[in-house]
Structure formats: C-alpha cells, structure tokens
Image (cartoon, rainbow, N blue to C red):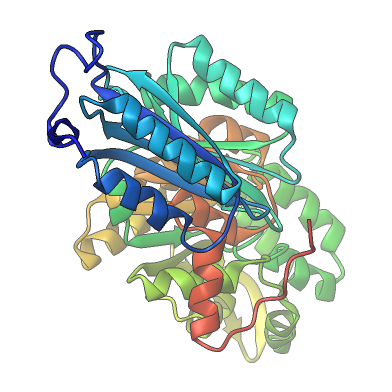
Length: 420
C-alpha cells in the first residue's frame, strides 16, 4: 500500500489532475449484517476522515451515504469500494467534490408534515414552496407511518415566520398539516403542556352532555359553537348556557364523567411525555367538578376551571365566584403554572381548539390549534387536524418507534400496524 493513502489531499493526485477534497460515497442494495462494517474497514485502510453519514433501510433495501475526506490516491479507494460492492452484490457511486456538508446557518427550521395518507403530490408541493423562497431541505426523517404518516424536514435558508406563512397556504390546498418550528434548543427543552379540555383532551363538550340530561342540548350546543367560533363573548355565553342547567340533579355530573371519551392518543401522549419529565396542566372554561377528576386520572400537575354552584344536590345554574376562566383567564393560568414550575413561557406548549384558547396559544412558546375552529387555525402558529393527540409528539422530534419501544419496555403492547 502506498504511503499516499494516509496523506491528506493537496493540489494534485498521482496522475497530476486536481485532487478532490471530499468524496461522496453512495452504496445501495439488499441489506444484510456486516455491510457498514465492511465499508468502513475498506475506508480505514485509506485513513480518511468521516465528515457526514446517513443510512436508511427501506423494505430491506439499504441506502448508505458517506461524505469523507479524499486521500491523494482517491481513485484507488474508489476501485476498492467497487470491489466491495461487487462482493456484496450492491451498487456504489463515488462522486468527487470540494465542499463540506454544512447546512446554511441562517433560518434553520423543523418542518413537520402530517397526512392520512400523505400523498406524493402533497410532498412535492410542500418541497416546491420551500424551494420557491430560496430555502433548502437538508435532511428528511420519518417520524411515523401509522395511523398518521409524519415526516420531519430539516430546512435552512429561510426564517421560520416566512416558511410558516408560505407553507400554511400550501398545507390547506393539499389537505395536510404542516408545523414549522425554529431549530433551536427550546424544541428539546419544553417541559410544560397546558391543555384545553372540551373537544381537545376529551371528545365533545361537557356542558352539552349535562344539557342532554336537562333537555336543552340542541340550544346549548348552538350557543357553544358560536362561542368557540368567537362570535359571542365567552363569559356572557357561558353564564347564559349554565343558567339553563338550573335544577339539574348533581348526580348527573357523575354520569357525564363516566361517559367521557378521551381524544385518541391522549393517554399515550401524557404517558410518554411524563416519562421524559414533562409536566401537565388543564385549563378549561368548563367545570372543575369534571376537570379535577380528569386531571387526577391522568396524573396532571395543575388544573384550573370554573366551579358549578350546587345547593341541596341541585345545580343552581350559577358559577361560583365573580371571575371565570375565560380567554384572558386561560392565558393567566398558563403564566401562573409556568411561574410555579419555574419555566419561561417560551418553554410551554399550549393546545386548544376554541376562540377562548387564543390568548393561551399566543402566550406559549408553541401554540397548537388541535382540530380547531377556523378562526383559531388562522391565528395559531401551528395547526393539527388529524384526530390523534399523540401526533403532537412528532413535532417534538419523538418518533412512533421510540414511543412504542418505551411502551413495550413497560409491558404495554401496541397493536401492530397493517402491513404495507
């Protein structure tokens, strides 16, 4: 072996032509044990420096990409790699270059795309809009394939605010969800989740379930919908709706609680994020007689809601106290809980669906409109319209495989996804 193999590239190779500074090696073929080891053993003989590496396996087919420093006798290395590829019945390409693989330092973002299904046309459209504003996709990772397909794009070259505005329009056209977040440490450091309850953590509205027992469900449901769309003052609407429950036996609170259904993925999200040290809070314009029990059941750390007045076992139709948890009250509760926990508002994730959640969503570092009313989706920085609360974890860089592995280690069995 020539001593040149161990020397860095200079200005010419052994044939006198300009020597490359880096080599991009791409190996593809059927995966099997030992492929990566054999490739690196070959590289070791040439003492190259590993600059970057990516390896994925799709349907047992391996794609290995390597960016390495080029030895002076780079053609000899290329020949050695081609020999290894032939022995493995694989294909290899070796491309010369002079650059590193650094993404542009400015405007770095994570763009998470979710679809059910995620169609190629939608990905093409999203990628096209990213290119249109001069940004670049540096890396793509799959976060989940079932029941939601989720991919995370590492994007550089455009400020997150500009990306968010452009991609929100395209996401609506393509019927997919797109979340844009700055690629910084805060994405890994968020430690408080503040959640709305009705139509967010649970399916449906508690006040409408109570109204069904009082015989006025349709009337209250219509008023609730208007309040959530921001068409009515929330406090006025809540007091008017609650007044129609006057005389209802308080035993129906137990019945309503027994009939509650959590949003799909709610327990998975809470269970997984609590393992990582996240803390949880409920902030609801609903009623503490229900929300406190939900918080206790799920192991939440904080809860704030309105209290129904009960006298002689009957609802009076009034709310205890002069102040209620309305739009401003939700944001104030978020800040209070963050202060008690000792984290900045920027380290809080807020999740809600109605107009009374908007101040809370804006106060948080990451505000997520979850299956929200149009006015909320338009105002929130991030919107998710898939029906699974645990999809929020993909925005935090947590993959479905990691979630299921943690559950399996705890003895929780996840149903296998359909074969694809």
